[in-house]
Length: 330
Ligand SMILES: CSC[C@H](NC(=O)[C@H](Cc1ccccc1)OC(=O)N1CCC(N)CC1)C(=O)N[C@@H](CC1CCCCC1)[C@@H](O)Cn1ccccc1=O
Image (cartoon, rainbow, N blue to C red; front, side, top):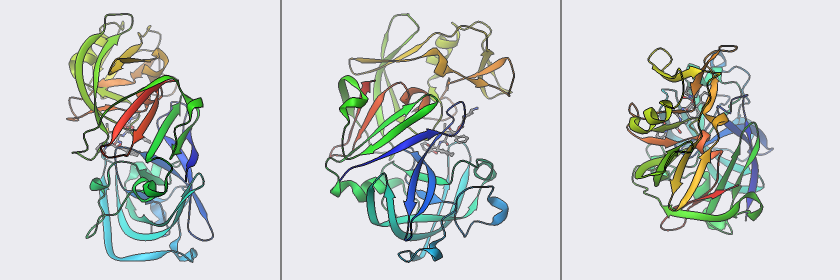
């Protein structure tokens, strides 16, 4: 089997991307944020208090003839940005872009934090991390990818995110039309449960490439790129008026300042993030102060290659044994 579904930016700065999925019988369509940084599949549902729902599509298991409650199972998750949700668990038919899983664990929200309520374009998350991270108790559940893997032509999914345009998540195949040149594969460390790999170094603008190992995670659920402070300060030293603002929680600069590109290495390959991706967004609508798409990871304890980096490449998440991750230009 294979599947292919669109990844659509939810706003004008690509803060996140959503992908349509169908759940149950008859099919209920929701827009989920596919997140390689977590491993829970959870949805706004008929169990979510009305006061916490603001226009999101909901999944109603009682309207699905194939839904079954997973007795006594609950889940609770808190993300890096402090957002959180928790609830019960059903199993039901689940389809992404023509690829179906019959008994997928669908975690229904009984409680979501205010940031989820206010994010009206996200109806839930679909975790594409390793199933070891799943929070369902007493028995943890498998991700959609792990459930589908055995039936896939090839045990892979690929990510092709675009700036202000619809990209794709493909399952089970690698579409040669989506990239140019070769795919450079590097090992993945599955220990923490994320797609953790080691970049071979970086360059700021047209400066020389600094070869060094930068271990981090490829995370579709994180908007920005978070790297070691030394790298980030070297970058913003080239941006006139840039300051690391405690007030705004990161590097900001005059929107009129010229920004260099940022190049990162994967093995011998080099990927350049255009300046436009790093001039992330005005700190408030109409402001002339902009927030950077490259920020320090010092507060996180982990380096994160989020959407700002993923948009600059075609990425293969290879779920074979052992797993690897492949990067190609596009
Ligand atoms: C540096 S972990 C911060 C990161 N959350 C972000 O990247 C959010 C994304 C967002 C924001 C607003 C609307 C929609 C989406 O965006 C910002 O935080 N931004 C963008 C806008 C900027 N002005 C400020 C900084 C984050 O927790 N991701 C997790 C998945 C997210 C959770 C929130 C909803 C969307 C999916 C996850 O993969 C991060 N993970 C990764 C590994 C381990 C644990 C863990 O939990």
